[in-house]
Image: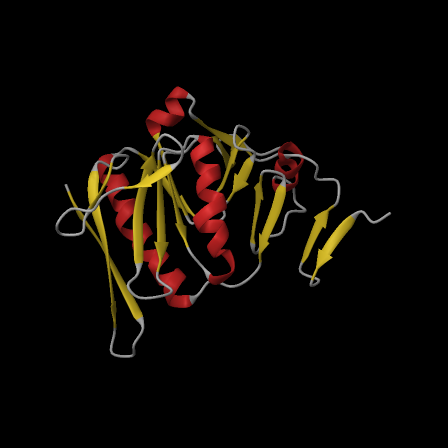
Length: 226
């Protein structure tokens, strides 16, 4: 009987991953792949080994992180992280690596979110966030469009995450939506007359502007106002 599934000689997935706990143990082991995005959603392992689009994903993420990390640092409100930052929620049967994650110090202090150490890791070294961070951002790519716009938002809402941002720069006009919890799921925040949307988590209003440079490539500016 086979013990693993090997995909394109790049990824080897054990066949005995029957639960979120099993997946998290694998994700916290030396056998977990160093490349690609691998999420666990309600018993389903979803793998995306495709490279990020240079402009529609890569430079866009850099701009989001640039502005948000400085905002969080100035406010002293918590921690903003990106790339290979795993969040897990037993309540939502979820383990995923969002494009951007913000967790407030208040959430850590109250236990809404908990830092998880690596297996056998040294004190102060963490590889996972369990519970509910305050904000997650997903940037839509071609191979993850349904996951980013449907399956992940449902899981993040069930996990109790207070704010969900969805960004899609694959087409024009680009999509930038801040979502907050409603009765049955996330609801998009209404933009003001200048196109700014209020983030309750970050206590600020944001607008994402995109334009084409002389070569026809995307360039982005995340603008904020009190």
